[in-house]
Amino acid sequence: MTDKSATLTIGSEKYDFPIYEASLGPDVIDIGALYKNTDKFTYDPGFTSTAACESAITYIDGDEGVLLHRGYPIDQLAEKGDFLETCYLLLYGELPTAAQKEDFSHRVTYHTMIHDQMHFLFRGFRRDAHPMAIMVGVVGSLSAFYHDSTDITDPHQRMVASLRMIAKLPTIAAMAYKYSQGQPFVYPRNDHDYAANFLRMCFAVPAQEYEVNPVLAKAMDRIFILHADHEQNASTSTVRLAGSSGANPFACIAAGIACLWGPAHGGANEAALNMLYEIGTPDRIPEFVKRAKDKDDPFRLMGFGHRVYKNYDPRAKIMQQTCHEVLGALGITDDPILDVAMELEKVALEDEYFKARNLYPNIDFYSGITLKAMGFPTEMFTVLFSLARTVGWIAQWKEMIEDPNQRIGRPRQLYTGETQRDYKPVSERG
Image 1 (cartoon, rainbow, N blue to C red):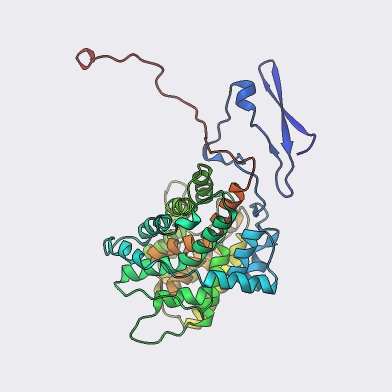
Image 2 (tube, helix red, strand yellow; image 1 turned 180 degrees about the vertical axis):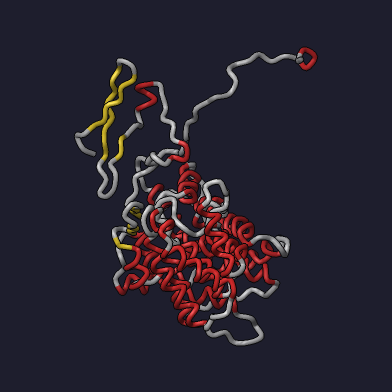
């Protein structure tokens, strides 16, 4: 806080509100006493101009294309580190020492198994259930199996719950995938790293040995890092709002997964790939580009531009590199949908219409192509997003619980309905 303040004038009355300084980005005006002092609320649909919390985890500058986790640029974390190192950073605020990293990795690795009775939960879903529906239900059920880590007032239990979710989400996600494919579940292996273990649980079958391709494992690890946290987005805000009521951490993360399922949020990479299927062949790209430029046509190119980033999405460059590495490692050269993607990428990067509007390919565009090439069906894309984002949700939830200024969330409204009316018996209603 500083000695600076902002003055609000309503009619002839003036009200002063303190200004808080940010270490990076815009300062904020504290309007906590606005209603008390003025008998008025602010109106901010989507809360796009409202800071709902104080956080030291992630910083985004959309105009400059900057994404920092605890001060570290996302490209450095993705190119030089690994996902569990990023998890440690988000949770504890610093990169781990060698000893801390080894200990943290060990603790995560030995929490990857799930309670055996949870298998019955999967069998309760229809065979064709969407994997995200399964994720919401199964993750929410964790509180029914792990009673010893639901007391949010106990720092040790909060830590155990955090480790359990980071460790068990890959197992649950892989089981959701296997269930949708009609294949037997594959148990985790403690001699595999986080990303390799997940790929093995998804694609191994009992009939033969499965060797994890190191290029794909590295790509998977990068995808996890790039999606680990993204400040106060819709799903993170959902987790914080649910957590503000004192809900157990497993319920809060299940709420975040439910919010992420929305096509405007976590489903964007699935929508981008579906668009590529709609285009079908490279020769049809000019037709769709023309439609995208027509302001009277509701069609828009999915996977281009970003609501937050008005410049290039800093995650997209790394995802682009990773995408081409995966395609090269798999020797994919004749997939018509990937041909459409590569040609569309070229058009978007060279066309002045797209360049002038900063409609660059974003992370969803490249991640969708990459995940398809790796063998994941489109309905699994958001599942992978939720797996990666779990650590960000947990870090944000943990920060919220430990914030002495945190209160239960209670947004206000601008009421525009009927004024008070008197009840009439049904016989008197016209």
